[in-house]
Image 1 (cartoon, helix red, strand yellow):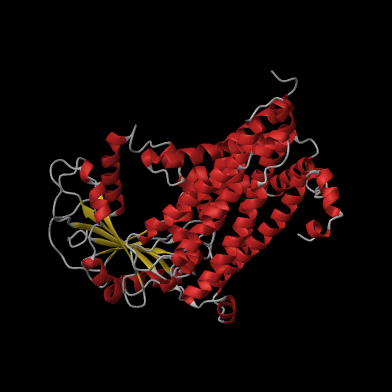
Image 2: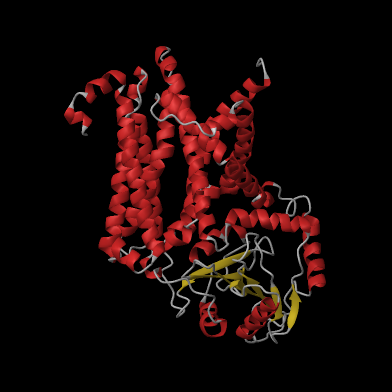
Length: 556
């Protein structure tokens, strides 16, 4: 089909990259935002604008909250199709859990409850709550944590939950991206020279290709490792061996594992009270300290609540290393007696934990976090310039042949690149404008995001007419201007609605909110620069020459 291997790789790189580049653009951009998802949460929920807190006292703070928790109405409603007969009125508690990171000022709690008459006897329903760990006071559940509950899941699931469709699309896109990276290296014979080549003053096609090659080569190891580690993290979804081929052995394996570890698999059926969990946490921290490890608690859980077989598991936060680690220590719930201390993991499990930790970046290293952001944004630039190169290379030919292929690709590229920014900034503006007591406030914020993105798509399609004359679509520049205005508006609205303007947050050293504001202003500045350059390029050579002689246009 192709005269040589390099041309076949070029075809593969072009079409695989084009078809799934739209998905990868979303993955890269919201993955970059997810590096600072907790900081975005604090910007979005002013009630959480205080310093990160350690895991609080279980006995004084958490226990009363857990005893008050019930399954959420949404969880009960979703479970109706999973039960035989009418839905039960009460749901006995099975387990409690609390999770935090070194960047969380608030604390997320969950409770698992039995689902009576469930078709699957292991099925459960869950309750969730977010609290102020200093007092135990509950924060509004309908206030969306935009960073950790929206941007972060969008990065890996696209919010397409039906049959895990989003996970499969992202996984396939990650696999294709690895193919595109390899084929991109093969097709570029002078890859090291391209590493140092960027000619911004050349015509659009040449500049776009230079920047595409530059960002692709510089961040190639980052992109490859993160595509691979993302596939490893969700390997259980892509290869669900445990609950498919090995389903008959699953229950037997869990019972065998419980016998080996000493952690009860089933309830004893005998009521029992819970001993002091604070004493168990202190003992776990003492054991970590004896090994020279940091002693912050990241995850705390109680299994078989209220039963004689209850046990408490305490896991270390592990912020001192890249690998995802817990060093779990488990205690008998009724007495506080030590049951088990997790042994060192196997080599295979250690590699898996390292790749997972490398991707999820729970470590405490701010410089490395910013390198993650730069790597993710370089991926965005690589994909966006790939779109531009594809359109610029083909628009004249398609215009002569009256083919609309380049127009549609350009419209979807505008939607994916600048439209995504407009949707993101619109959501932040809605977050600052919506009343705090508005019912289902988080859902409204999500509707604003999707609605703004749909409008951006409609605008991009509407403004593709110049493509029929082999000119650049004005939608690029227009949406850049819109993104700049929205980003500045979000910063101003944060000041007006909370009083936390930049001078105040910087003076107080409160960088989570100051950082988001500064990032918005930086995005606005880049959008203005891009809009001006795109506008000049859209004018065309003859019009640019005329514009150069016109003070009004030259100063625009």
